[in-house]
Amino acid sequence: MLIGASKNLPSTLRKVEWIDTHAHLNFSVFEPDREEMTEKCLDNNIWMINVGSNFENSRKAAEMAACYKKGIYAAVGLHPINLDTGLVRVKEDKLEGGNREKEFDYNRYRKLAGLKGVVAIGEIGLDYYWRPKTTGKKKLFKQKQKELLATELRLAKDLELPVIFHCRVAHKELIEFLTKNEALRPSKAVAHSFVGTHEELGHYLKFGFSIGFNGIIFKNIDGVDFERLIADTPPERILIETDCPYLAPPGFTNRRNEPIAVKYVARKVAQIKKLSLEETARITTQNARALFSL
Picture 1: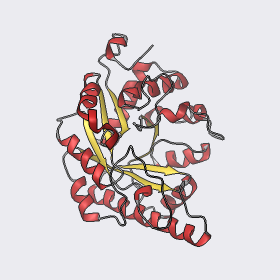
Picture 2 (picture 1 turned 180 degrees about the horizontal axis):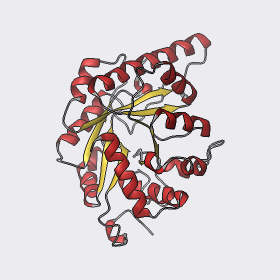
Picture 3 (picture 1 turned 180 degrees about the vertical axis):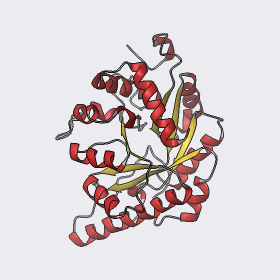
Picture 4 (picture 1 turned 30 degrees about the horizontal axis):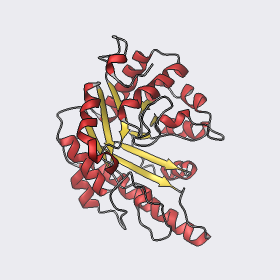
């Protein structure tokens, strides 16, 4: 059954509220139909948090949130990949838009984060997928990302906002960083698009973090047992997300992912947790409301 449109949903689900806790309608790929896409989601009772990855698209996310009384929210931050260290060449993401930044302008981001509808700092964290080859440059590269992370965590503390963590090929080091820097560790956060080990999941749960699952749970990634990860994540810690325009789930008719596909993720989670789809929607929506004070 195609669950992308409300008319195809059982009557008990048509008025259910869903929250895509990690979307990117603020990215340039949605420029031609952003308003239409947003209205489509709201018509289907899908709320969303559009997450920034640099100043330009963080500002776009904040501008979108300001246009709606409810349902559309924003997170602002500088993604670790978008810190231009000069140490590694990163493949341009044409879907994203905006520029890489040589430094984090604390005051400019702070002002942006204080706007109406901004509910989190993110996505921030560590990403060692693209990294230098030499030992010396690699060490400096990691140091610069950790310095950026510390600064953005201070911003979250300053504004008392939750954090959306991005982590790729770096869970061990992120956990070590958060363990050593307890004063910076947020009390409210989500490990977005979690792809890690069962042990790493345990650390994030011990920190009190929520865990974000999206279309990547349908992929076959060596060493990652998504069914076990979802089964062992308490229902009250699960958030559903799309990370659109990326990670479209199987069965979704469009190659470009959209917030409306969050229902496919919810259905998979429901199957693993042995819950109804309606109950999964209720729980994950409640979780999102609590974490982001919606």
